Length: 207
Figure 1 (cartoon, rainbow, N blue to C red):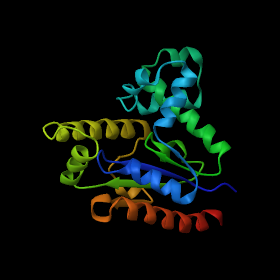
Figure 2: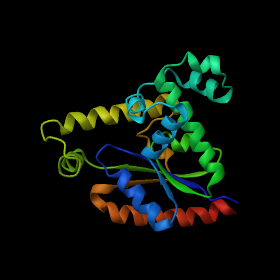
Figure 3: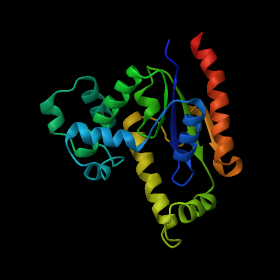
Figure 4: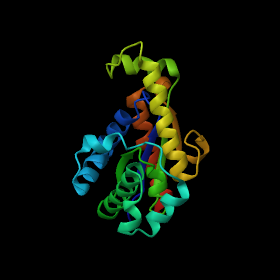
């Protein structure tokens, strides 16, 4: 039996991507974040930078995306906005990876929804605004004058993308297996907690 996949949703500036990579290294499994976009671009024959602006943009509707995902046809997909096409293509790539690999860590891209039937250990990484702004400035090199604005816009895009595509609330901690405050715990400890919790979860998953 395949093991559940770790999916991570994260507030901008919370360090979710770094924590996800650390957890993957500790578990010895693959880590997917931007690589999903690169694979999508390769499949579409479109440069990744052209797709990046469409990724996590506002999709058309949850029901329409669900219909297309379940019963795709070339003609129907051609009529969709690029944001919807990117989501559908990424969802297929994620599902294909889940078939090929025993387990991996996936950051963003509505992973817990896409892999709902496959089984996943879903994590939400968050932090207070002040801590996230500090990381944006210190680690991401964003200007102190722009950090808060960039952070809020990124969170809004992620929240809308998740809510519309899944029919759930991105910030509802009840929908996740584990929620961690990276400011209180630090990146390394967050990764360790994810690994230990995942291993315990995997025992129940295997039963």
